[in-house]
Image (cartoon, rainbow, N blue to C red):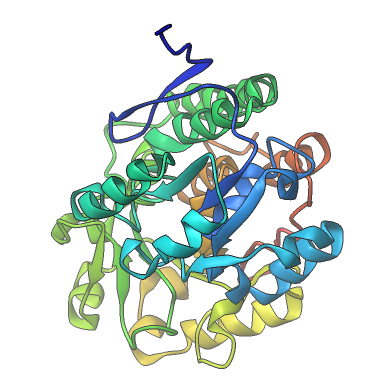
Length: 358
């Protein structure tokens, strides 16, 4: 019997080796929002997508824009909520006959997926892990490269990666001008501000922390939170008196007192949200608020390859003099014009004066 010839081999972010006979033509995204990354690799992501998590549908504005631009996406069946492997319908996945299922390590830890892996393997379906959320400073390009290789879009990946690396190198070069003899500015980033918890959810050892480190800041949450994220008390925050306050949120906080901004959201709503979350008693007393070092950021930008814009924003917010040459808006425009199947516009970020990502 002749040996099977594999057309491509992939090593995912967990170190698992996966081989395919040909680039995948039928793909399932366990986390639906990863369609944003997919759409940077191909102008027609729905041509390969046969199933996805329903999480992307919760971001109503961006989902509507994606389906207006790519109507076929609205017909793609869902296989779970996108929140983890436990709610994935294996029967539905198998019925869709995918070549590969792409899961996010951050949502579906491989240690919990032994049964799922066995079931998919028995059905002849490959399983691959990517991760844009846990350590984006390290895993963004690696994850995008995995997706590109799986669908035979290596050249598209290389074009984007060249752009991304050049922007990151520009930040690294400018960072050499930071005065190491002075204390690092202390950054309090309140994730999902005022929407999921009264106060105050923050990234710990992961997520935004790697980017804050790269641009010469110190993440307040990283001082005490040993996991990816957790809660900080108002007393601890007030005692620490961070130099910079960043509130993250999105359209998913609509109807709450939280920070509402993001793709295709109006700037006026973002400004009102930032004013609202910084008016809370614990936050209003911060020196960062009094000194107008206050910013709003669309949270899920960090979880996509658009996060190079986040790196530039953090750099300018933390060390405005050192990184004055950076232009995050120009970087966003370049991604939208050169790579994106569906350009992201709207209030992706905002400060307490008039700067915005629109």
